[in-house]
Image (cartoon, rainbow, N blue to C red; front, side):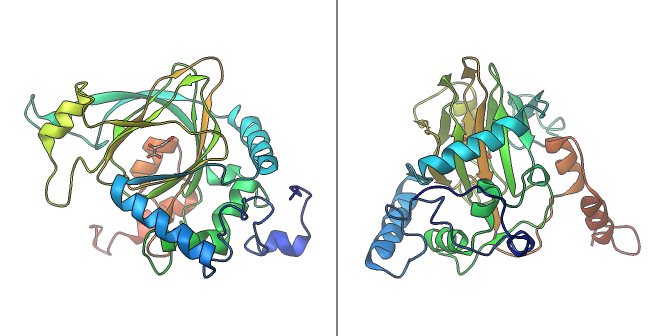
Length: 299
Ligand SMILES: O=C(O)CCC(=O)C(=O)O
């Protein structure tokens, strides 16, 4: 089925959730619009089992080739305007300076990356249509054993593309979210692999010695995954330490990151948003103000 990237009718623009995504998702292979069918049920059962076993599932070729090309055009054009900063951070991206000097939580890695944020992605683009699609959200919820998932209410986060320039990398970290979905836009010519140590920590157990081992170069628990444009990854990143290795070659690595929440209305914290994206919006300022009680203390 061919991709229609025509500018939609004004009514569709006003309601980006309208319409199916069969023209951009390979629904012959991944029947996300028909989860009650035999093929749909088997897709969910298989994805759930693999996620449970490995903490990561890859669905190769989820996007149709014409949609991949459109996504690449959109993201490459916008990615050129993104500035990539280099920082050094711990796996927790917090302030660990008060910890003992040999505490593994103080170990850092280098990050060189920029972000195409949601406000830079038009409503009728492939990325946005996939993110808001009710069929896609139902599919993701079913894979995670959830009744529903919700888009972020954050104007910047929720739907972003991570841009890692040549020579850049994305350091070791845990996610604050239980799960994240990534969709490869442009792979690195070499390097740029996604590496993760499955379930390195677990609820109530930070496994700091495991953290030290991985961050000081022990590869015994680390798995590596590369993705081709159009491949989707569903990853449980809260317990699995992960990173992207240095991007070699001359072109940036572009990865679309689709985040959903288990509750509606999620807006990122002010300072963290400033730290990650280099800016905040009125929405973040208002949200931070409303989170303060009348006595000026956090509720
Ligand atoms: O770019 C990737 O493959 C993963 C990005 C990542 O680690 C994250 O979004 O937490």
